[in-house]
Image (cartoon, rainbow, N blue to C red):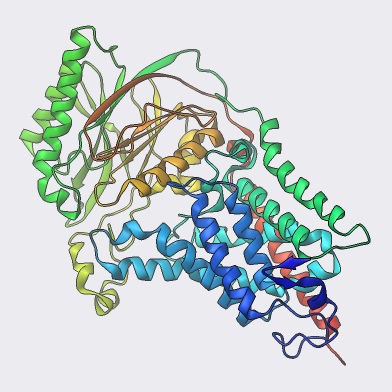
Length: 537
């Protein structure tokens, strides 16, 4: 059998001690580094093209398989190094949108930090080599468990974590997406990684006399893992018995970049005018009357609760369209701090302060600066964040009247618990308010893929409202409709069905991740026992 141009059977039959693992018991060798390093690079690139805007979702399993082959039988340091190489190949291009307007340093630091978690994954997979050697059938399962464990850690550390680039978020066009209705993003990640483990098991060597013919079984198993998603019923969880007509307003900004904030009066005017145009079209019978209008994050970076003119403009728009508007805005206070919020603005009465959501997960080093004095030693660019954002303390459950909304703001859609809390709190429709003016279309499409997963996970019709795009609606089975272009003004209107039930994923919450991550720890502990037993006396 050939892997990376090397006859693997010849390598495995070598009785010499594993040169990459001094002090370990005598046994077969890993792949040569001249093969393993290119495999690690290829693994990262395969994972990359699985995500939007490329969207080659089967490549995610291939990337998992290539990394598993590269680190198998290696010592911890080598496994970590190869995992880091794969991580850089994945995250540097995947997160390239972070350097568009802030310079290279934030991009480089974030990419290296995320690659560090794949280094831990590479070390863990190398450490588990004795387990998968002894119980070869366990290779796919162990691979899946380690990936879930890595993502669980990366989604929480440091400063609340950064879940961008989870395997689950690459599967927005895949049958495996439907598994989210059963076990959320962790189960989708597990399935993709298991499929990758089956692929590497098939390619590594002929296990028995059947040889190449036997290797077809794991490949068929990998296909079956993805196909299993087709057996999961998806759609509206429960039925509130009616639909609601929603308008998403994408007002656009005069110029992309960090200075969009300096144009805040023009940005607010864009969203007001687009809503007034919609109202005129409704009056003329060209558009249906919306029950609800959604503006994106940062639609009004002038605090409309303090600025009389801004408040009057928003009231004018709400009165004209005759529907409440969920306004993405910045609110001043407490003290010198700022809050990133969604405020419900009703026609005739103005802001409803009982229906206000404050973002619960401000972005570190973008919306607030942890350890500011230390961070300033690395880069004085941190002082661009003049006022730290403070976090809200309540889920984004907003009763708009026609529907109860589950509001999450921007990157919050990547965090499992922040979305689930809105559904368990009564949300019938998921709303993601976001501002992509400082990024690009690739970032926007990656975010829309997350919205698709959340719609399936919780059986809720969903929408994404962006200042510049991509905005659109998502059905509870993950299909996108009325997606807008990037860096353009657009208004899209659609009737959505409301849901009031709960999927299995909503009911079980974090438990699939807890169980799978716990089993990953058990796999590492079992490997430790096996390694001790194999040490020469």
